[in-house]
Image 1 (cartoon, one colour):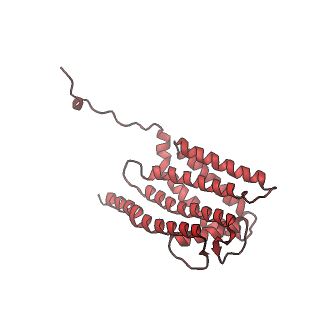
Image 2 (cartoon, one colour):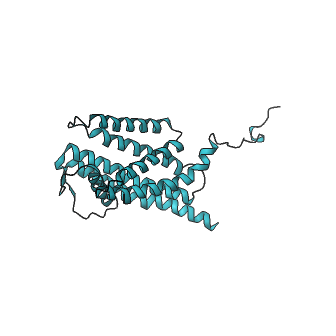
Image 3 (cartoon, rainbow, N blue to C red):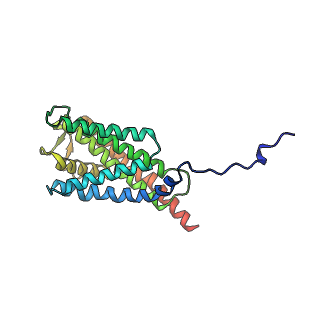
Amino acid sequence: MRTSALSVAAPARVPQNPWRERVRDPSLTALLIIQLCVIFIAAPLAALGLPWARPVGEGLVMVLVLIIVTLSNSRAAIAMIIIGFAAILVHLILVEHPAAYTNVFPRGGSILMFCALTWVVARAVYAPGRVTLYRVQGAVVLYLNFAIIFGSAYRLLWDLVPSAFANLAPTSGFTEIDTMLYFSLTTLTTTGFGDITPVHPFARSLANLEAIIGQLYPATILARLVTLELEHRRR
């Protein structure tokens, strides 16, 4: 007699990496705290020229990368991180021989690494299971990542086309990082103070795309996650 497939209970799902499952949610909180410190504390202090602020900011970014590697089981994400580090290393090697393309390496490396962070965090936030406060915090990390990625893209365009933005004085180092983060965040949140204006077609296109993401993401995905978490609490 043929045994019915419905009569056999399906085995329970066993996580391939139970330790990664345990640290995933608390890591989202740690990522958010570190990211807030980098954007709103370390970058402005480094732009003011404080000698200890830059190594602190770079150290926090290294902690971010370590958390990405810990959380990730994606070879693609790890490959993006390795390529990003390699690009930054190439920049450090070529810094004694600057050329028009030299700044492409650190900007591209930064974009790759934060895209990897976005990929890893998105997989943790939208993984199967109930929505928790940790996942909502991870969604905020994704939102801030958009600001960092677009900020790096603006910096790259600014390096390649110095006239791409109006009302921008030439800067370097962390002053430039802080300036582009400021412009990126005001664009993402559609604050638009008007003190920095994109005039190059690609700069305008990037700003338009970031503004659209900045409006749709909180109003749809982030709001939906918060609603699901509140509904679970009421039950």
